Length: 91
Image (cartoon, rainbow, N blue to C red; front, top):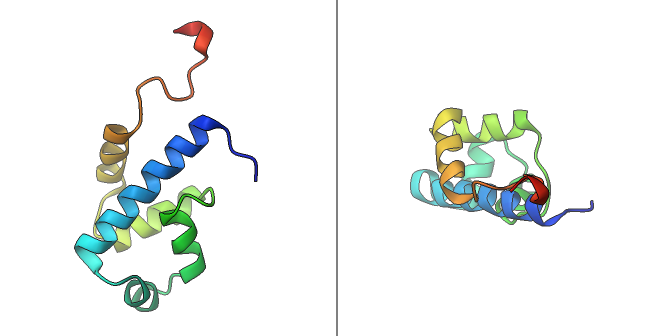
């Protein structure tokens, strides 16, 4: 999978939020995955920005973490630059 710089910034922010919230609300990685029927590999890849996630996967995991998708979006918006994915010539 080829990632550009903006993708990497976004994926890192997503992973940071998921990991932070999982640790705060759900505790141990293996237990969270087991109790919620989430593949450990998939969860690891998300938390460590190794893979792009489907929106359905993000929605499910945020709900399992006790977050609304809107809350997740607000947290994500705090971490990513406002000019992410904008054409440099438009700035």
